[in-house]
Length: 293
Image (tube, rainbow, N blue to C red; front, side, top):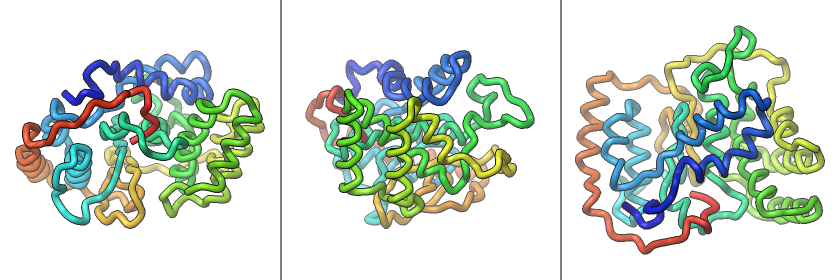
């Protein structure tokens, strides 16, 4: 067990991270159900679970990404020179996170747990997370398809600004710092729109609702999409090559999965290749310093 996870209550840690977002988006009567699901959604890839995770994954592209993310987090050789550099990956209600998140070192305006949790709100239907569902209310949150990544990036940045800044003035200064720094590494996110959404959120009493309103469909309708294929996301460095159902930052098209028997067998073989004892020991790091991936 990596030192970073030895004494970490993952469910409680996750609840603290996503709690403000859930309370901002959902009415009080629905908050407990959503928090329960999200608190149990995060899976840190570790020697204790990596083989199970890979064997149970039905999407080969996701299996490949998870295996490389796990190897990279321990400084081991990747399975290919062009393996995607992802730090978090979401699929339906699961959020797979590298233990590098607990080591910090990334942008202080980034939080992959909040980012991937935000994608859960369009990755599954309301009944999946224990909320009442009607014909007109199928999804936890109504988001425009083209705004999904903008929404997730805005949520993570806004959560960090609220966490780092105690007063409105401090938060506006933090936004100015963010606006002059690096933008989300995703060509589907318009930098000017992203910053403007955050500025709008900081001026509102409930900034979460303002983010949602700015990312909602122009008309409150939604085309039907396949619910049997994950509409997952992965945060990736620019230029990453591999695509797949959990690699929305690299490939928008929903792929057709491999036959179940073939996928299961290949995932099993890949899992057997990822031998936990072969990874090098990692020096302990404080979970309190974690800000991301």
